Length: 163
Image (cartoon, rainbow, N blue to C red; front, side):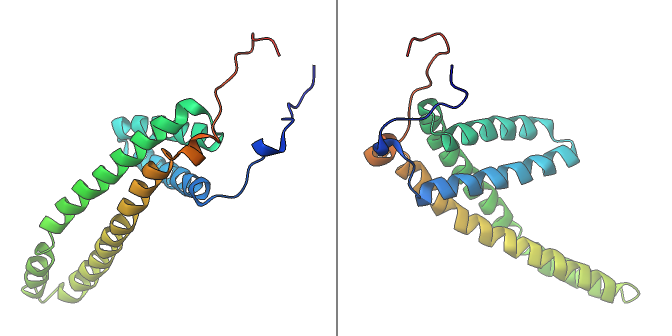
């Protein structure tokens, strides 16, 4: 019984593809998000992130069951980014209100203004990343359904099957 299973035909060899690179990026971002949820004790989001990581790893390994599941995960993440981005935009005017409140307190105005500017920059970066990730995730969901990509995935063989 061989230790490593080697596929016989050259057609099954993996070639570089942008969608597989996108899967690795999604996996890294999911892992980072999972660490954030773990740090903040947000266990429902941590459990959902763990499920998404398992699906992403299955897609990287090109298991057929993970391809369709990854399409769903990509769409759900894009919708989550859209909804959370819209919620963030609803609070955009709050920065000016907080700045005015900070300036009204001259004793702490400099420190509060500096902290507020830093928070605003983080807010803007988060919005920009959401704006970039939404079309990328939708593209990933679309490309995972294309016949050329679908052909690169394989069904998991049972340990007990012959051959």
